[in-house]
Image (cartoon, one colour):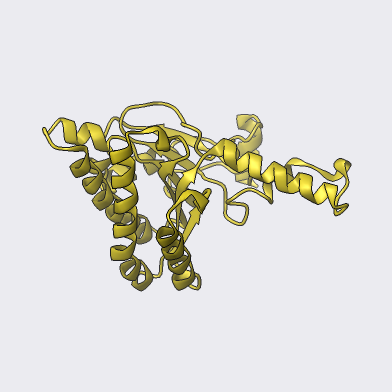
Length: 253
């Protein structure tokens, strides 16, 4: 779990792992006197653009916050719309993703979803499991606190069963039970829509992630906007608790 300590030079424009909170579908629609449904549909089109842009640029992992564990609090018609759009988009895009060599994964508590959606999620993961291009992670019915809680529960179960001792529980061990343990931690977090908060997204994994906030609403986010975020990422020095001089020494070694 310990991050690689290195400086980011101007030529290293690309993070390995980008995580995005896709915010602003509703406001995009309201500004155009459209329904929120129209905004969510345009947001789905933006997902396709950014998946293609990340694949073209050689980014290894893209994690998208599609539906949070708190989103169930929204009006029921909107939740039903989002669930239907989720399934429809998955059915429509899975072949395209497979042909593009994208590996699709889902994180979150999928037990709350309808059986049909759960089955299709499993089929989509299985269909793309051998793909070697971009790993696209969809966080659905996901929350960072839920992730840490389920990891802690599994560690406690292992301790209760005698498979480990309390003294063996470390941050690295707990990390192995979190949802993205087998993937590089996010280098760059992007939130669209002008809000500047994490909203219970990847709380464990974002410990050393560079944060980037933009006023652009999600349906308007495109490859150019992604490049701007990556350029901002490349301009920063990632110190991971060290001094600038220490990191410069590592980079020069």
